[in-house]
Amino acid sequence: MGNPRGFIEVQRKLSGNRPINERIDDYGEVEQTLNDEDRKLQASRCMDCGIPFCHWACPVSSKIPEWQDALYRGDYKLASDILHSTNSFPEFTGRVCPAPCEKSCVLAIHEEAVTIRENEASTVEKAFDLGLIQPQPPKTRTGKKVAVIGSGPSGLSVADQLNKRGHNVTVFERDDAVGGLLRYGIPDFKLNKKVIDRRLRIFEAEGIEFKTNTSVGDDVKGTELLKDFDAVVLAIGAMQPRDLPVEGRDLEGIHFAMDYLKQQNKVNRGETFSAKERIDTRGKNVIVIGGGDTGSDCVGTANRQRASKVTQIEIMPKPPASRIPDNPWPYWPNVMKVSSSHEEGCERMWSLSTRRFIGENGKLTGVEVVEVEWMQDNGRWVMEEKEDTLRTIDVDFAFLSMGFVHPIHKGLVEELGLDLDRRGNVKVNHDFATSKDGVFAAGDAANGASLVVTAIAKGREAAAHVHEYLTKE
Image (cartoon, rainbow, N blue to C red; front, side, top):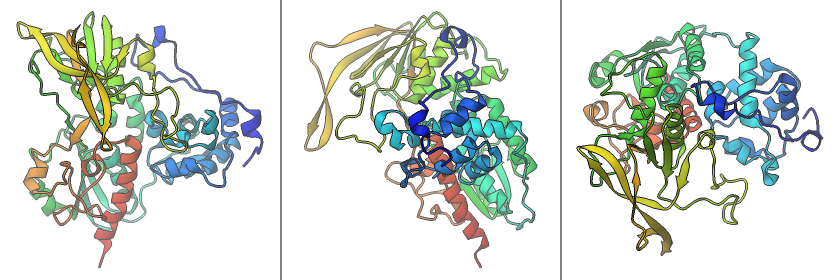
């Protein structure tokens, strides 16, 4: 620990966001950066605790006290090397991770946690600027071939780890560009896609092969891959969205959140859509159904499209402003969250259930909602509608952002006849192996929808077991 009194002498300082009136005119990253000296001071606040709860809370088990100290000392190579020892792309998590590490920082007891996430992003960017992050292809090859299906955070993590072990890795992606959820599920104002492209150039130089516009199960059969490759890893995510099967669901103007976000990201890449295909909320009333991060991303996108009004509703009760007694530190705080998108303009409502969609001439004009109350019944939370609370919200567009239920079964999963768990995820054992010999599953496909950082962690774990499978006698 470079400065034992850092957490006493230096106040927590965030980099902050770009001004609202500036950022809603573009899709550039919202978050700003601190200068090098301020960043080192923030790193000096790490206490190097005897029990680093930040490390415990981090899905990739980042060695946070160690690289914070290296950052404080200005040793960017060491800090970057430590970060990369547990995470293939800390520049991604440094931007989009909700930072469970910070919530478990000992200083978070007084809401003054070390700015771990921002320090992470800053460290990697500085390492790139100094030319410290360069391709490191394996010195020898094993001759084993691995097919990774899906190029999201889990798939890229699997590919990176297996390639580093000398296996020949080919990544198949059904979209026109590599990145999966990172590319098309996260808005550019949170993750500039040049950051992804920069990392992909390194992976390609290290020998990973990428095949885009290739849907395995359709364009290429899974059985063919089993013949051509020694192992196949499914990292296809949990992309089956939770639907809202109520009256009026088929009205024009109702879309899944991911369809909306994906199209806007494609437009930002230069792709064009016909007037009929384009989901453009300019001058329209928008409602986002679902209160999570994806819903927040829809809010930010609608604001940038100049929607007339944006409303976000959530069926669960409004969270408390601070921790309650049964939600203590160092666990994740179930508290009210206000994102940068919410700051840009959004009316938020809680404890509302959607009864039906209302329309005229086949087009959405309103959403009928009712207030609900949550009560415990034998230890289970149950919902009950409140009398005389039925009302209609006038809207032109509704975006369904209620999470994802499981991976898409049609295509590859059905073709290979893979066993599923009770939630519809691909069933795997402790070695990440599926019911089909030589086929493994990693990330959301096996564990259900979760964080980017969790997908990365599961990808690394799966890669270790695939390596054992490939090298066993």
